[in-house]
Length: 235
Image (tube, rainbow, N blue to C red):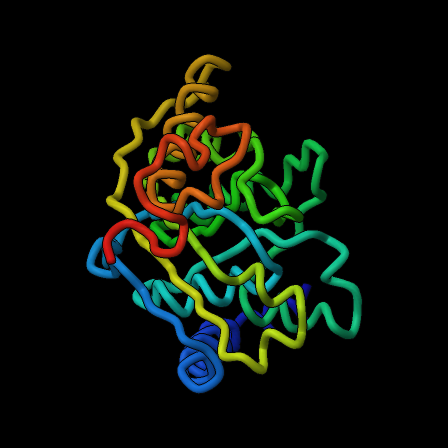
């Protein structure tokens, strides 16, 4: 416990150092842009939600947001010593995926009740195909139980990082930040409320994505979108 408390004093410094270092690196090795950064609330409980294409998405999203320090859940396997030091320094906390991890949920709620920013990927894991999958209800449940503002975002291009050779071609990344969504505080949300908000917030994410990222779950494939899948809305 003492070790954790001592380590936690370095977390904000490490986070901002890592975030702005990554911004500088991306400027050199990639072609990336951020659309809608003015939509990021400067203060207050903020739940940032996005699609998920690559393991690098959390720090890249943080580099795009820039205005808020974002806490993330990360799979518990990443916290094994010695490499587990890095996600802890970044301010991440462990979660058992595909399990009812009550401790992780309560930790997430405490972060938001303190007025901080929490990042979550409603799909629960990165997409293996590049198209969005079905979201899990945990994100909406946390939003309702805390009344936090939800900020939908969309990441495109990071799926190219799955091939190391693409890093030599200055890959294109885009982060689109949507409009904040007000969510009512509900102490004991019912299943219908959670499902409704899950669909609503994921629909907002999908609105920010080019057509090629939308799959069978959304029902918004190429035939229902006017763009050609190369540029996100807001360009």
